[in-house]
Amino acid sequence: MIILGIETSCDETALSIIEAEGGVRSPVFKVLGNIILSQAKLHEQYGGVFPNLARREHAKNLVPVFKKVLEESIFGMINVKNQIPNEKIEGIKTILEKEPELLKQFLELIPTLEKPPIDLIAVTQGPGLEPALWVGISFAKALGHIWNIPIVPVNHMEGHIVSILLDRNENPNDKFQMTKTIEFPALALLVSGGHTELILIKAWGSYEKIGETKDDAVGEAFDKVARILELPYPGGPEISRLAENSRNLKLKAKSLSLPRPMIHSKDLDFSFSGLKTAVLYMVEKIKPLTEETKREIAREFEDAVGDVLLSKTKKAIEKIGVKHLIIAGGVSANKHLQEIFGEYSQDAGITLHLPLPILTGDNALMIAIAGYIEHSIDKSKENDSFKASGNLSL
Ligand code: KG4
Ligand code: ZN
Image (tube, rainbow, N blue to C red; front, side, top):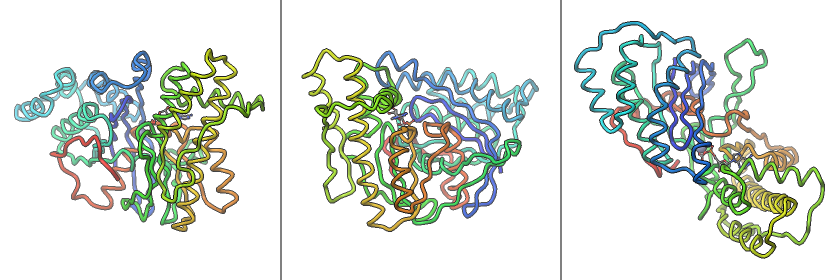
């Protein structure tokens, strides 16, 4: 079947089209189109993502990105002339009532577009910024209404988990992607801008949160520490780059030592806000910052984060006895984390699954894949009356 994926939970307007088969036991995917339009540059000047600004940008960009993904996937059947029944137009006006800019573009597009052979729409329901989520959901509902196709609401965090299913093609001419085999139960460490969670996966679609951050998410800590070090937003890649420079130079000032919060606690929870505060105090003490001290602090911070994440993940693995570990979410792009988890997995005989580099951050391929998994398990969740859910949990 062919699935359209829509992701607007934060600052990426992303659309994808995939072909999927094999069901939940042996899913195989063919990527037909994948577009990610990032608003990061716009939000950079404010040092973070503003929900209403993100919403406005999604509303402005969804139709152009949609046209692009249709073209990419060769369903670019634009420039026909269709007569749209009046009751459909009225329905669209109600669905997109709160998004006048999107409504205007949508009503211009629809009469020129032949219905592509899309069978299902998968859209992020949450967690995320509600105003941003609503735009994507309304867009999905408008398309579902005009084409009479079902919509499956997707949990963004399940999206990150299943993002690891797409593997590199052995034959680059073959568009069907290899799919990784996961042995259940498996463990997922989800590390993003909004979440830090350990998830026990009993089977696809069956998740249990066994650990989480009590305060800041790890990506959030990266971003806040980057601000303290006067680095641009988003801070994760910047800190990562500086830390890597320091590792390459092989210098490390021992005096710059940061705490490893909750590393010895018996539970599987995390805390990163104290670590950020410790960086703040450290910087206050040694100001003005030189490039070299920034590098050293970035490295020590990354070491501290890595030590805590690895220690708690090991604890979880030992406790539940899993053999497959998934690390996903924006922070899974971090080289140092990939290295320390790679070494550990090898020593412990654990199979480590990471997303392809283009799929670590937010994207709509993972949403389409999660939509297929959910559709294969239980079609009863498909409806057109669900709401955005900013705090949706796995
Ligand atoms: O999953 P994601 O793209 O969006 C959310 O759902 O939050 O994650 C974004 C987070 C940001 O905090 C960003 O700074 C962080 O991922 N990030 C990184 C790296 N690349 C992105 N953190 C550490 N190292 C990186 N290389
Ligand atoms: Zn995310």
